[in-house]
Length: 391
Image (tube, rainbow, N blue to C red; front, side):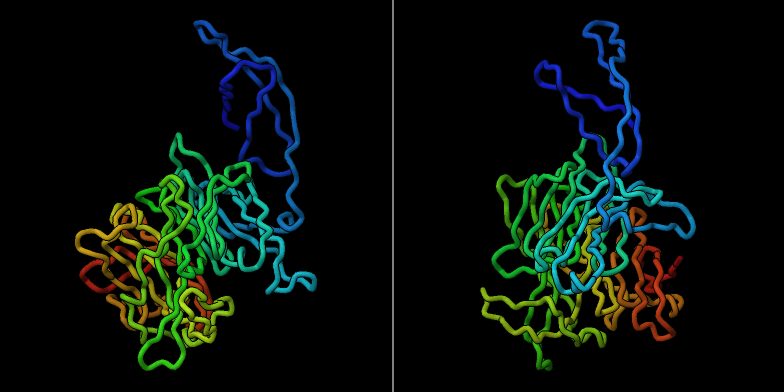
């Protein structure tokens, strides 16, 4: 354990120090020191003892992480876990939902009970404010986020539901929150801190529209932003709509299915729920290589798209917002060196610090058979061919 220092503003005989990242049901020993208020500042031990950390909730105590091979690349991971469906809690009904953090050894070291109505918890994303470490989602209801540890910054947690984004302190209290704006934003999948500005939180929204040649309305994605640094800012805003930059004919069979959670938009009068779930975006992140690219993953297009022209405050630059490139899908700007490396229904696309792309390939509807893995593609270039490493 690190040395923790309490600096009370007033003198007293009772002080409290919060301890984070403790493993549940584990015995810890401690020593308490004070520094003499004169030179030399010699630490003097005044108390020693032991204590037992709290047990995990029953839902989480049944969760087991097993590292099949290799070693963890980052210190911490974040995950949202809804308790499994039972006869008491059918799949489409509210049930116990937890956000938690696990360490390199798969031990849960922080958790937050998120018991909310279905419309609220179904789309939870989760990220660490204060830049801590990494995660990588492996499917629906599991969202993780790349963060870097930086000294002197709080370790708050940011989460999102379908209608709001919330910042929690390590103790679980709400620090601040923002409602989705009145334009019927249906937030989903992620709450993602901007790599260029940790006060900016990105998420995805949903919006339906009519498209020539299609009987059903098409359900696309929007880039949604919350500026948590603006005093009193309790509302998100839509920065742009991906349908303005993508070809609606670039789709898979999954694009013709419906989203059971789409409830329409009473503000615009669009109450038609029988929409085609065209893009099904599942991640939106700022590139980690210092560029201003935003990279988005669209599950039902089998594609990831990089957008340019958005500054660190989420505003358009002088050149305007534009599509930089696309990997995967019919409108791809690149081809794969080996066709078998093509990804299918992927999640969680990142642009890493070296410019390479990392994503999780779910492998749904892969022609040669379904299997999933993580894939890392070398930095896109003018060669228009992408070598891919996978594991």
